[in-house]
Image (cartoon, rainbow, N blue to C red):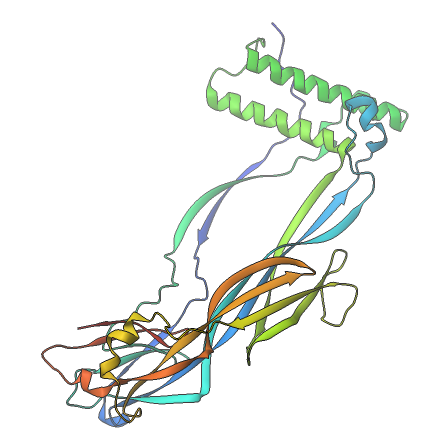
Length: 365
């Protein structure tokens, strides 16, 4: 039976308790009630659409190993890093339509004493959420606690043997390092085949030993093959559509510099097309169902949006990297939900809105 060969080193595993409070663009809301002090009315804004472009980019750093010249000779490796370099990659891109208050669209919800619409929920910047109904933002994600393990990257210096340290040349050091790699591989094979006289007796211990051997081998192989690290980040851009857009440059992207300005010709342009979708039928079932509730003069009631739709496509040079359909309030119209629907005390009406578009989500009675 062969004895298990494990190079001496310190493997530290840290147990991290990470409390994750995942809240994505949390919407804070306020409740406004009917009162004499506000003349039984609440002011609100309808939103206009602002496009948020999320560019997900990464920076790749590659480092050559000190023995890359001997990679093929001792390990048979040909695809290795031969020089230190870094570059950027545009991983993906997405477009989200958000709503901000349109200062030109300020309206009043009249909460008269004879109605059953005693309160309104607004976002903290004044966008309407509900009338006569409780509101809980959908984008709140419940707090969760998770546990994860992180293993520190092994320093190759911890694997250096006396023979290695006494080597008189780079070629000899590379040769000794390669021999250690083959010994590690042989030890792992002995464990897996049961040919080791001090192999772990239980599954947990065996898993840990195999993991240690894998970390040792990886650290030594990187002395020949080199290593690479990737760091990712998201860069956000905002555009307020004034109308349709044709090849409007959002930013430029350089493989060597990352995101650069729109006038920096060192980068390839990333541009957007935005086209209004013309349709006589907006497929808004809520609007059709409640069309009879619209006031005759178009003024007395709750004004809401029927957002338009737009097709959008983003190109990186000549390559399409995003394509989708998004709501754009600037391409839509407004309608009025007449006040009389709130006056039936026997059948209270609750109205739910999409705060980001100002459109009606549903009406309950």
